[in-house]
Length: 561
Image 1 (cartoon, rainbow, N blue to C red):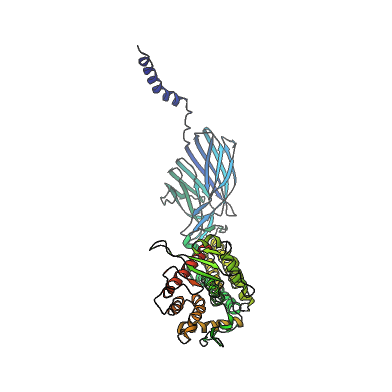
Image 2: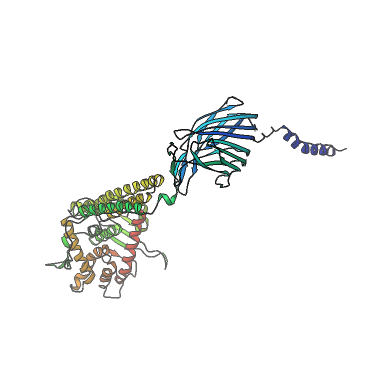
């Protein structure tokens, strides 16, 4: 016989017998506990407590036996009734129980004793809070038979309640309203109750009334059951208090704005500010109070943002600190790009934020490409904004930096909002006034929003704002047509940065384009030049694209704008 023929049957036999051998070596599963008898005696004391003694005949399937006494049961739609279980003792076969463990668990107490085989366990304990007041008088109740993981075939109870007038009993699983097998009030004021069959995990609860002669006083304790609907109850008390809290918060925010957040003077309509200074060399551009484009934007909206920085760069170009060179497209539909060339370093005539912007743009050299500026500008722009905010304070237009004022108000609002969140959680957890926390949250949000308008201009700042409004009216309604032809290009160029910060770029770019009086290509206008065959009449589209592209570089480089 071949080796294969000899080995194959042996291997097959091993595969068939191995599971059987393995199963035979496993430990036997412990049998379930079984209860064969149950009886209980209970007595209501003068101080309103039940003293209970239970006798349980059982066959323990393991080395320990556990049952659970519930200390919290459902009373009605919103409340639970709580009981106090104390003085727990136990004996096993007439001897003090070994390994007695009385531990608190959620809404109950688990009692464990050492028990094996046929055993008689006797439990003794006291239950408080068993007397309640109802529309029918005082009542005593307690779920006596409870907490067994196995069924009880028959339970008998004898409950001594002085001055008891009636008795009822319910048995079955939790929530069952099935009456007990029998329940009666004996002549000795003892309640005699019998129940044939209590399922595993089931209960037997008795309820008895007391006559007026009973001296025991109600001591039942009820706990409100938490629910989302109750935590955020909508009634006269919760709505009223929430409205009061929200009203106080809104009035507080309004008062802070009225006292600290308003301009020191009212800004009037003002007449159009004609930015023209007539001199020996003809009319020259002259901004009101010598204000610069970046300052205009910051005074108007109290924020140093992208458009203010872009307008400042245009102004520096017009003033000959740099030139903007439009590069030829790489293809017919290629992306537009520009080269910025620094003309000179500038001196004390430059404001600090203007110098900071020039140094930020040309930090890597005197020639830069706009499309490559994003990453290099990232660490430098914050200084430009810092200097611009500091400048408007130095000029006396704001008492404090607008961004710092907004930051303080916003921080206070966010702190109040956070406090409202915590208060909402706490109130919702312990009461029905969760809406009051919401009111605090809304008050915090209102304070944070009010902070966006809180930076207050001084009287001088309000006056400058009025003149800026007049300049805006002039740039909106007027043109350079009234000026001599020889001065229109320079005047329109000087107006352009102010127009850019006030949203009028296209109009004044068109004013510059209108000075192109021939069909020949143009080399440029000093501060802006285009590629080969570029015409000055194209500058409107060129400048619009430049403003968009450079502003995009700023926004990409620094998300703070």
